[in-house]
Image (cartoon, rainbow, N blue to C red):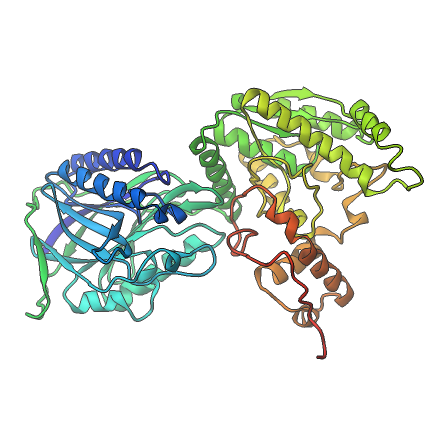
Amino acid sequence: MKKIRIALAQMNTIVGDLYQNAKEILSFVETAKQVDADVVVFPELSITGYPPEDLLFKKHFVDDNIKVLHSLASKIKDIIVVVGFVDRKRNKKLYNSAAVISSGKIKGVYAKECLPNYGVFDEKRYFFKGEKNPIFSLDGIRFGISICEDIWEEKGLSAKQVKDGSQILLNLSASPYCCGKTIERRSLLVKRAKQVKAFVCCCNLVGGQDELVFDGSSVVVSPKGEVLAEGRQFKDDLIVVDIEAKEKKISKNVKICVLKQDVSTEKVFIKSKKKKRISVNEEIYNALVCGTRDYIIKNGFKKITLGISGGIDSALVATIASDAIGKENVLGVSMPSQHTSKGTREDAQRLAKNLGIDFIEIPIKQVYQSYVQALKKSFLGQKVNIAEENLQARIRGNILMALSNKFGHLVLTTGNKSEFAVGYCTLYGDMAGGFAPIKDVPKTKVYKLVDYRNQKEGLDLIPKSIIKRAPTAELKKGQKDQDSLPPYDVLDSILEAYVEGDSSLKSLKKKKINGNLAKKIIGLVDCVEYKRRQSPPGIKITPKAFGRDRRLPITNRYQEKKNM
C-alpha cells in the first residue's frame, strides 16, 4: 500500500483577472504545502475564471493566460499542482485544459473531452475536443485527470483511465449551482467511483459569476462509494485527505508520465472532514447571498441601494443584501405615493430598523402629479389605466437611479421569478437596476426563504405583518396581485411545468390544471419575452432560469394548436 495526501483547493476565481487568480492559486499552494500535501488540485479554468465566454475570441487574452501559467509554474516547488487553463495548439485551436506542474515545470497537459453544450453551457462555441489521456505517476501511485463533464459520462474517460492503470481520478470542475444540484453531483461521483473501482477527487469552483453561482462542495469518494471528505458550500476551502492505494499492474503499452516529486511517508494522519447537511431553503438562501456578494464586489461596488415598499420581495432582497455586504453598506429607500397604505409605510420603516440599514423616505406624489399635468393634453379624453400606474413605478426607478449616479451605489431590483415570467413588472420602473437577486426565485419560495431567515434569527427580522399582507403593487386604490393573477401557488405550479419543464398546454390539462387559466398564463409568458431581455441579471437557483438557460426569440408567433 502506498499513501498520498491530496488537497482540493476550492477557490473563488474572478473571470479575466489572471494575475489575481494566479496569486490566489499560489496562496492555496503554500497552505497545501504547510499541511504536507503531495498534490493540490484546482477547479476548471482556475487561471481564467469560469466561464470566460467571448474573452476567448481575444488572442491576447489566451496569450496572457498561457504566460501566467508558465510564470506560475516557475514558482512551484516541492508539490504537484493541477491547475485549469486555456491551451492553444499549433493549429490555433483552443482547449479547456489542465496542466500538471512539478519542480517548476509543466510536466503534462490534459484537454477536456466532453464539451457541454446545453443550458448555461456553450463550450463547443469556443473549444475543441481533447484526444489524449495522459496517466501520471507519483511514487507508484497513478492518477488520471478529467475536467467537469468528462466524469458525468456513463461509459467514457473514467473507465479508460482506470483500465490504463489509474488508481485515483482527479476531476477539475466548474459545476454551477441550482436547487438539488449538490446532491445530484455527489450521487453521480459516488456512482462513478463504485463503477470504476477507483478514488474520485472532484474539486469544484465556488462563488458568483454574473447569474451563475458555484457551490463548491468538492468531494472525495472511495472505490466503495464512501464519501471521505466534502468541502464547504459557497465558501473557499482546502479539503485535505489521505489516500492509500494498492499497487496495480499496467499494460506495457500505456505511457506513464512519472513525476519525481518525493512523497513523504512520515506524516501525521489528517482526519477527513464531512459536510453538515443543511435544509433546501438554507442552501438556496446561502446561494443568493454568495451570488449577490460576489456580483457587488467583483464589479467594484461597495454599497447598494434598493426600494423598500413594505412588501415581502423587497424585504427579502434587503435582508440578502445586508447579509452579503453588511448592513452599513445598504440604503433602503421608501417612495410612498397617494396609494401607499399606512401599514406598508410603517413596515418599510420597521424592516429597515430591524436590519439596521440606512433608510430614507422620498414621497413621489408631487412628482407624479407633475407628470400627469405634463401629459394632460396628450391624455385628453382617455380613461385612467395602466399608464398612470406605470408612471409611479418609473418615477421610483428614476429616483433610485439618481441616487445610484450621485453616490456610486449599485441598485438592486426586487422582482421575483413569478413576476418576471408573466410580465407583472414595469420596464424602466421596478425593473430598473443593476442586479436582481431573486429573479429566479418563485413567489411561493420567497415566503419559505423569509421563514427560514426569521427562524435563523430567532425573531421576526422580517415583520409578520409583511408576511401576512396580501401581495400588492399599490399602484391604484385597493389593488391586490390576485386582481390580475391567480393565487401564487397555482401560478407557480403552471410556471414550473411550462418554463422549467417545457410542458405543452395539452400536458398541463392532463395534470388537472384549468385549461383556460393555463392558456392565459402561457400567453402572458410568451408575450413578455421582450421585457425579460431588458431586465438585469439575477442568480440562477432553479434548473431553468430566464436568461442563458432559456433563449427564446422575442419575435415569435408559435402557438400550440389542436389541428393543422
